[in-house]
Length: 102
Image (cartoon, rainbow, N blue to C red; front, side, top):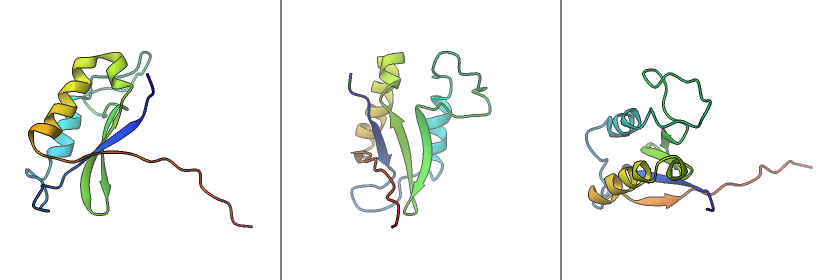
């Protein structure tokens, strides 16, 4: 499987912030126990490295690493369906190499 990172944007189709305001933290809290083998993080205190909340341009978002589906396909389906059921945009994250100035 080609792994990538996706992000769910917390913005409604009318351009308003998705509510409740802590939706990203709640979603990531539910997914906190999904961790790679050997990860010693305590799900009571840390988020999963596969599902993390971020703020992008003042919009709450959740970044999803699709390796979550390798661990448990149902977990990835749950997160994706949350976004779809609530009409939240899902975008593929772009990665780029920082350029050095010469």
